[in-house]
Length: 367
Image (cartoon, rainbow, N blue to C red; front, side):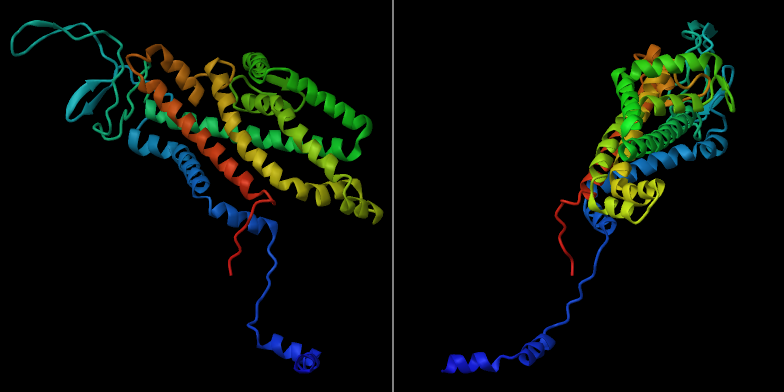
């Protein structure tokens, strides 16, 4: 009887009173981008890699400041006959060779081989020739920063163009299907059938000789736009094919059918319904392909089909320094280390970004 009495005493009014006594708990909806940021900010390795990449970009962006105020020379200025003061002593930028008379003993001594560049001064010359000089008497540190500036411009610019072209082609192929999908897919297959480096070398070598002059596009030989366009063109299939697959899957979803039933235009559906759902994949692809494009640019410039002399890039600096790698290893180690740091930083951050944007990742809720 007591149990029945307790059961009858528990009414809706009692339940509302008990609920009012509980502490108020606010349930706040979070967007997927906010949840992704929460995952990413807990990944200290990825954030550290992003910081390293920003430091490299900042150092290369400040190349004109370093050249003008510290090194007092440009990236293409020769100092064959100049003398620099190192620890208060005059040192030839390029050794003159020959013989000289020792003022103390009066003996005739050999100066050494002629044309040997000065080695790294390590700031003992007031910021001049910090990493030494090349065989033309040019400041290696200045050329390293300017070369990084060019390599980053080409890497980021080609990644942006490649991602945009691949995104447009994937949206058209995945949404319309039919003959348009068949044509774009065959284009992707043909581009993917060629090795990336070989195709880029062929196009880069052909365009670097006479440039490109067709219609409104007028690119002179040696322009940075030539390797930028070549790299973005040869890699478009590697971004477009996976994006097309995602769009084909989204094309059959209910929200797309609802948008079509409401009379939405194809362009509105592609850019308002489909594009936001693949934005995370596009962002990850863009981050990772920057690192890949920097490597491709370095390979092309090393082989003479990318950035053309006297313009520096990390690839051309390695090519110029390979002949003296035993006697002056810093000529190749400097740009090589810069490439490794930049590519590793981008890949580590790209992996962290991909994990953060994964909707299946577990998020520890914070109150």
